[in-house]
Length: 266
Image (tube, rainbow, N blue to C red; front, side):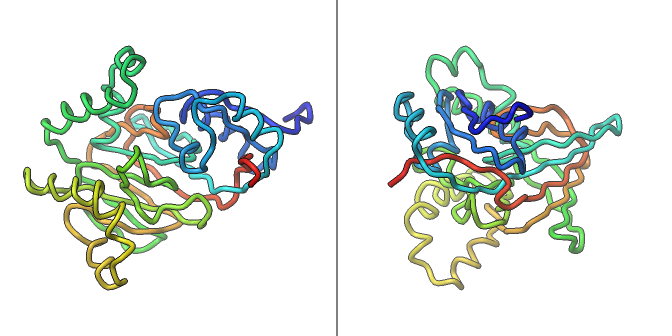
């Protein structure tokens, strides 16, 4: 950017894209993606070519620009130090981060997203929950005990798996989901919501029923521009699939339109 570049290509997965996006925040320099990762969640959300580098480069060089929101996470570690990081897809703590931190990288190279399933089952059987205090958009603090919390702009984590059905890259808001089922039946309800209800039935429901479902025990949804979380015990945090280690507290905010992405012209 200091040399006056007109365009930057990020070749890799969501973690690589996150790193580049962090450096481009608010610059106006457009970012083009050549997806080469395991999930490529941002590329899928934007409808970009997957597995076709030539088409990806063509979209970058001859496409059109689109401004998307950027998430910013500022956390405090156990030693009191702070750090500010950007993300494009989502930030997660709890079960989500434990899955990312325990996934076998060699297995991921061989079987792709199936490696996350193995790590997820292991973490799931631990049944561990975290206690936290959260404050939304400067409101009153509340206490919750949950398995995982996700904050983001992309709600679909795999084909047919929709964790945050109202998430958008361009609405200037963050979507938050707290996962807190009780027992095996609770996990079955979570599976129903993310695999069936969110993907197919939610759009058919009247607003009253959607609001009821958004406040269900198993999956609690909300939207905000800023959320503060303080943890009772240190927890790992992940951003776009990359683990950043243990933290004690984090503030997450959205910066509307802070990143310019090249997408195919239609």
